[in-house]
Amino acid sequence: MEIFIVLLVVIVGILGYVWSLYNGLVVARKRVEVSWHDIDVQLKKRYDLLPDLVETAKKSANLDESIFTKVTELRSKAMSTTVNADPAQRAAVESQLSNAVHGLQVAVEAYPDIKAHAELGQLMNMNRDIEDKIAYSRQFYNQNVLDYNTRIEVFPAVLFARSMGFQPSKPFEAAESERSDVKVSF
Image (cartoon, rainbow, N blue to C red):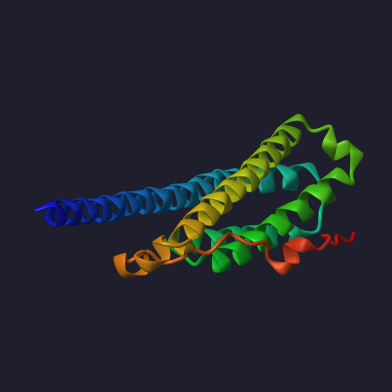
């Protein structure tokens, strides 16, 4: 009878651990998903701001039309990338757009009389704020990915996680072009 009770306690303990492990992994996976969507919210804000920024910059300066065209094309390309896209694909597109927007800002800032344009200055400040929030959201996402991936790879969770359908997530990495300096010529 004592062996039965000990065996029952061990089985209940194992089931309790597996239950707790599963719930913890679900919570960690949900944090990754939510933080990925938080990035998307900030990107949507940037997409909404860019047409105003481009139009105001066009009105304020005689900048090279290719800068405006590039920002507009990359905005469209980025918007067509779905929220469910692979983080590496999404990062590449967003990196190109960030570089183009940064190039636009550098071009605008090169003209002192343009910087005095109040509406353009306000839009550029809003864009900087959004870019900062995007960077923070990416860091938060990557931290959640690290936490989730660590949880599914440590012992003894590694024995159960894959069989319960938990696969590693990919972090949001900067594209190679985002790691180099932006070159702007006039």
